[in-house]
Amino acid sequence: MSDMLVKLYDLPPLQPALDAITPLHIQIRPARVGEEYQIMPWIAQHFNESWAHGVVYAIHRSPCSLFIAVEKLPPDPERANPYVLPPEKLVGFACYDTSNRGMFGPMGVLPHYENRGIGTALLLTALHAMWNENYAYAVIGWAGPVDWYANRVDATLIPGSEPGPFRGQLEGK
Ligand SMILES: CC(C)(COP(=O)(O)OP(=O)(O)OC[C@H]1O[C@@H](n2cnc3c(N)ncnc32)[C@H](O)[C@@H]1OP(=O)(O)O)[C@@H](O)C(=O)NCCC(=O)NCCS
Image 1 (tube, rainbow, N blue to C red):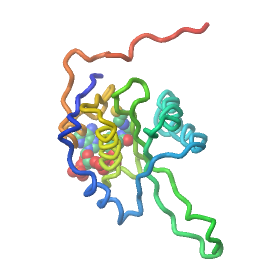
Image 2 (image 1 turned 135 degrees about the horizontal axis):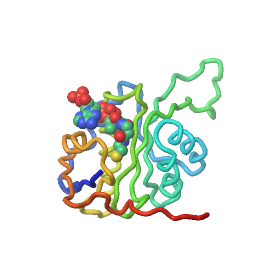
Image 3 (image 1 turned 180 degrees about the vertical axis):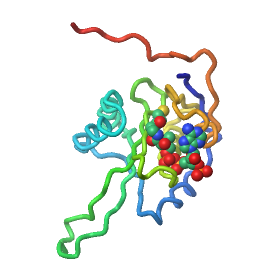
């Protein structure tokens, strides 16, 4: 699969994408240190084991470059304790600067939550964060849904980028 290029100085605005998922009780936020113990096995289970490793670096990077989509579940009225926050269900993730600097991805949304705008909100949150960190362009590494990235952020295929940097495996045996 090829890589794609995104002009970060020409991104669609973020707020409408966030507003679109608010009625669904979905929020996007940076992951917190310590949450890697929930997020890594979740990514390995639902997407790809190799994707799970990069998130550790993204979580501990400063600023954090791993964003998660969480569904805010209704608070339990039985537990009226102000220190007990409403539970959150992890439904999607997006990160950057994991395999290579300046590279966006991987990302994923739980199949049951697809087609509700969560992927777009995650993508734009991460790309706007890259822009705010002074990157001018992002590379979407090994872009799977090419048309989706093209439609959402006008991403274009980078000629000759297959297999790109994802070549060769370290053998330890
Ligand atoms: C790609 C992905 C992140 C999109 O998440 P999502 O939450 O469904 O995205 P959105 O709801 O914002 O966008 C859905 C829209 O994109 C369209 N779409 C979905 N996949 C598409 C594709 N491969 N090509 C073009 N359009 C696509 C849907 O039809 C929908 O269109 P609509 O807005 O007209 O209804 C999600 O499908 C996913 O996790 N896929 C598996 C993991 C993956 O491939 N990750 C990318 C690794 S590089």
